[in-house]
Image (cartoon, rainbow, N blue to C red; front, side, top):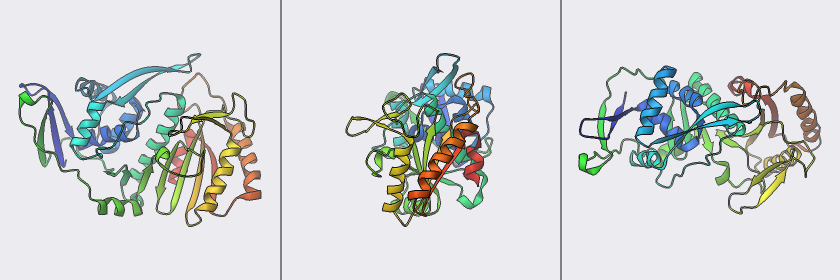
Amino acid sequence: MEFEIRVLQNHNGKGFHFTDPYLYTLALLGLDGPFTQQQLLDIFNLFGDVHEKSWSKKVVKMKDLHFLEQKNVNIRKRDGMLFNFVNITNEGMDFLKETNFVQNNAIIRNASRSDHTIGIRQVLVDVLKVIAENKELGGKYVTDQSIFSIRKQDMKEKPKHVLKEYQDDYLGQSEPIQIFKRTEEEIKEAITYCVTSINPYKTNLIKGLIPDWIFTLKSNLFYIEIDSGKQSFARKGSLDAEEFEEENEGEVKQTTIKDKVEKYIKLAEKYKNNKHHVVFVLIDDSITTRKHFGNRTARIRNLKDNIGELLQKNAPKNLQVSVISLERAKDFFKT
């Protein structure tokens, strides 16, 4: 263990001891959350090792610090399933800023809680697992000027640095925490060879195109589009058309899968030196957000046929579009 930050709540030493795995997990929650409690446990186990029951207790303790909040959400009320969503609080984000792990201008992401959110975060978890298992990817994940070294650590190992952070000034003098400060040169170097997350709302692609998630690897750009079966290929003005709100304009737009693919074609033509990978990920029964999502084989086949026909006419060589089920996401990105 490199460090231990003891966040203390009283004179008796009550609080929480943040070793590397806990802080990395909290930071990922702040930069990429919210996650379900199970997804957050899967992330933690990339850095350390903890059982499910013990993890539930740890989450409660971090809630006692007011660093986390939980909300049970019944996704799809009819035949739905209860999910325990975990999100970071402003106090938790302030703590991360004090450690210099995140930038001072970092803000908490949209706290949407839906099957769509679960799908996006599950793809992220799967990509992190691939990084952990594949040494050729450098063992690191870069996001919002932070570098995560993804390697499992011995939870019993004595930390090299122990620092104290008091929640109230009258309890004592907190020690300055500067051990996570990253230089601009370190970030630039890591981006050249590591998987790097990009906030789609902060990226100027093509007007009206906002992927669910973007990440890069060297000259490759990956655009993740989560599909829950509600969006049609070409028909607008219906419940099947997806609605989204442009962050800066506050204007609600409607789009279809065909619209998206056509915009990705323009994007690939605009940035010819990059390889563009668009991945439509269909939510399936691997996450039971309702009784049955049903067999997605027919929708996958139909989307592949329709998208393939569109690409055959117009697609540049530096664009690849894939359609997969969520269950296959990890194997897909591993390949």
